[in-house]
Image (cartoon, rainbow over all chains, first blue to last red; front, side, top):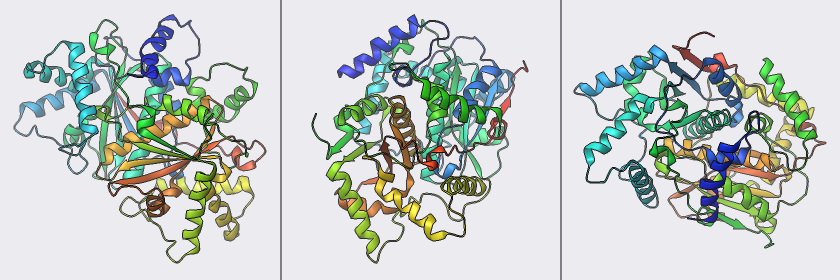
Length: 251
Length: 251
């Protein structure tokens, strides 16, 4: 792990816990501090706070400013009905992957993605204390995805299925912007591609028109600070591994 | 324009100009303050500062932490050689759109995207004082894309062409994270899908392996504060237009 990676895991957390009320959350602090939270408290996320977050996040950029996105936010009973719809589906015969022609990832996946994916999963189950041999326990944990890991709010990202790869990139810009604006306000998040695998069930549940599809969902709420899984800090490839510098004068 | 939209154009700019050295740039301030800059000064962007930006931005999230991205940063002579390669192409016979099977957007585009796209273009040319009747002047301005609008650094985003829509969303998360981390450090940016239209020329120029493709580029440098085009603040759809709230208790 590089110096920067450990910088992420120590200094940013210290800063988060010593912050004074009203103190500004800096951009880099939020980028380094945002992590996928997989255990939430039951504290509700008020509509007003969610609206503040999204009202800022809608300023995410997009090619030609087309804003190729729509969101559906669920809380309370509406959230519970989504959980029920997906649970009913899983109890039925047709609980297969519903991602269709927009799969979450190619399968099988190749290097270096395969190893990165394997590593973060092992790190996560390590925090949970679930060994690889205990497949049922791993599946039970993953099933928490379908309950937003206990979060009070679910946010679904909707895109026109006739739009292309570029517009999916723009949708990703919106998603990260939501996550950072949430972090700034003490709201934790987990981007959940899991929901893509229930895409058809969700389309029926929300009565989406044929041209719309849900890319995925995001759990939003307040982190359970006592949950070991929330201490996971995923690795990143080093800068020199992912970026080639050409024509720069050495300093 | 909503209250939030005018909030963007006034308060965030005031704050940007009255900031004390070392003062933290908040997340929302950066989201609202970041805009596409289309006129840069000749001030170089040092490798060290660029590395700081990217060293934070690599903590952008991605599904299964696969980090489906690679970047190529060019400055100095390497930057100029990219500009030359694309100019030579345009002087040749084959200056068509090279976006191939990953077009920048569907054509023709439909509503509401068509109107949003039209509006931001008209607003931009309005700032430039170029009427719709003066097509040659509009094309001359657009040609500045191929020179990074004068920016000292170009950053290209590379993806494995066998990856799918989800991974393009992740790539978008990285791009917005770069733009925000740059803004925090006073570095201006312009995401340029233009470069997708020169994708094959760039692949040859950078000698990319067959499985890699460039999504697009980003100009990075310092904003020319005297250029009217940089005062453009693109609209956004209202929150209620893009987000449906279900199950929230009215406050």
